[in-house]
Image (cartoon, rainbow, N blue to C red; front, top):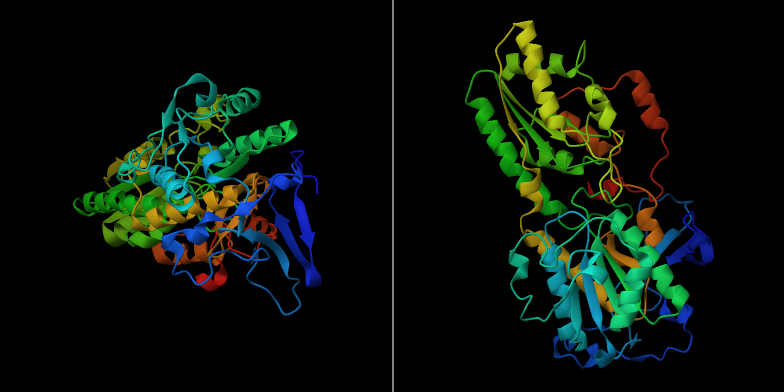
Length: 481
């Protein structure tokens, strides 16, 4: 099946509406590539495992909420080690690159790819590409060994460095070919994964025996299909520190307001989950849910009401919320960064000034507002225990897939199972909070805030198509929440 971006998807159909959206394999365009027994069968660490290898027919369903007459629907190939591998250990020359913004867990993924290749498959040649995609042809490489990466998971950021955009697929593939690299592990968000898809297509066009594996990274949790992205749990946990500080500041003074801006350019998952986890937040504003300031039912009216009731309040706002209200900055709304992302105005500063000015003009009450912006602090910290485990499993799944000859895929958790997903499914749209779902309703009942939606907005939201995977758009199924 041909996709909108010109790539093709391997589809396998079966009985009762079963569809497997399969990932490419080296043998699709190199039919004579030999296979070899998987060395894991002789690995002492796996000697106690009842079943070494994933069954070739194992797939994971995309939709888990079904009706009695529902078709079996879309599936993805289950991740894990296979009986046959298409690379011998001594022929593998792997490389790892990190691109885009920072995120907790990057160093853990790097570490576990290196250690997984070395300890599970006996691979000793692994390079780190310095400085993102540009590093393939403009920077030095770093030799990665288990000893070198041993402690890097305890640090934030990425030891490989990163950059945004500006890459040339021809130069990158030339570099891959010249260096004799045959496994490429690419860690990054939606823009990075789009780049990975282009690199894979060029490698396939040249007929190279090179596996390209993606590990999706976005602190905003806005990548579709997968349950969640690594670093998200850490971000929600760290956001509590800022919310707690805002709450202490607010309740320590008369009519205190604590305003916290969190990351979330187009998707408000961090703000939503941090609010639900905190229970100290009175109002949460996200990009998916429009709001207005003035008049009956507006934000200013709610702030005044809550201050009269409690004497203080905490507001959490995602960085992408309210961008349509920043009319005075419209002349720069079309500016973009090197990755093509729209540069956002600082809604936190803007709304803090608006709130202060409103109450100063009204002269009904004197407010004391404290604004906290922890966004770059959050993304620069090491991953927590939950994310460390998740990063380990993602990295090992990528290694197993590349060794088994799969290519042009990204790894991800789908309904609690690790899978191999075609690049086009990761790149086709952005995962967003659905404000007509139960999760957003739970938040509204927790904060007891108004929805700030007029009847037309509500009707429009309800008309929007239900998510194709049968899951809440936040990646969690109804039966999990």
